[in-house]
Image (cartoon, rainbow, N blue to C red):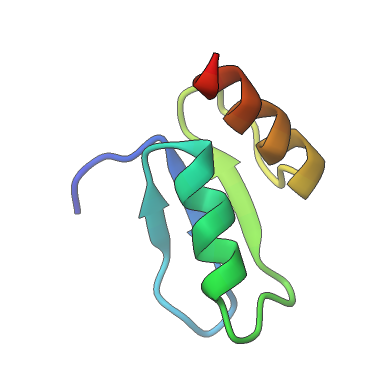
Length: 63
């Protein structure tokens, strides 16, 4: 698996790798059952990012 910046872990499903916060938002929106999903940022080592934190990162990326 290629190294991606963000990893979405969903219980009972395969981890989803994303390179941008926008991809994370899209992936979370596409999940049928996002309950228990966690987002980790491999670049900063932050784990369990909130949706608000991801949206903030996405806004920073767009600037």
